[in-house]
Amino acid sequence: TRASVEVNVTNDGAVQFTKAQNEAFDIVSLYLSNIQRKESGFHLTIADSNADRVQLYTGTLGDGSSLPEWIQLNPRTGSLDVNPPNHVKELIIRIKAINSDGQIRILELQLNANQLRQFLGGDSADAFMPLSEQLHAQQTFGYGERLAMLLDR
Image (cartoon, rainbow, N blue to C red; front, side):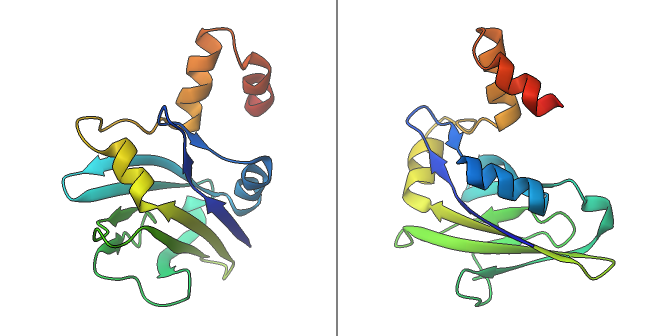
């Protein structure tokens, strides 16, 4: 099972996903839950609703080649530490979750490194706001209540 996601960051730092991408998350049970600025790059947290069945996480670039040394994948959590050189503008990373029953699920992330540098640069270490926090903020202002109710079901 596979999901391909293009990570789009808006001017206010929110990450946007299309309806099709959200549906793919449901099928694959893998999604990008958080992006944080690190001293030398970014930390991407991957959430997996089937993590209790995962034996191992592995990763490759979009073309199937091995991850370069500046991308470190945690084989127990699937999370990534990414420190792209300045010449890297965009990259595709495939994260493969291998379950103990042999099922393989793949999450493909298309990252715009320049966009991440722009919105996570400087002093703003928390420019990315996870979807759950975005929904909570929208509920606080009376916006998105129906959407939040649908997602809670």
